[in-house]
Length: 99
Image (cartoon, rainbow, N blue to C red):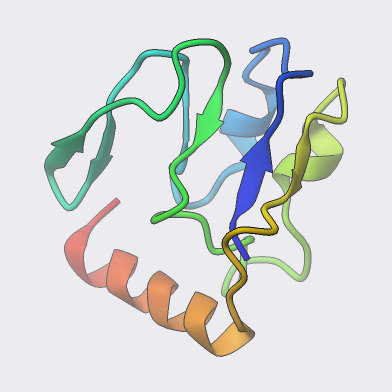
């Protein structure tokens, strides 16, 4: 399950610093995967590019962005449920193509 940043976000970037997958972007900024640029997923607040979010699987036991967020704006995305195996496969893909 990828993580989601809600409207409570104050765009302080505390979460961005913690992300090992470089999956967190500033509002309006395009996100990049394997050198390919994709349109921003939010123009209103910091956002997580779900194709890059592994919930820190392969790096840490728990997602690092959630405790870093001072406004408690990061939640599990109920629309993007993934198994641990899928998250590991995603990390391996990111390792191969680049973040």
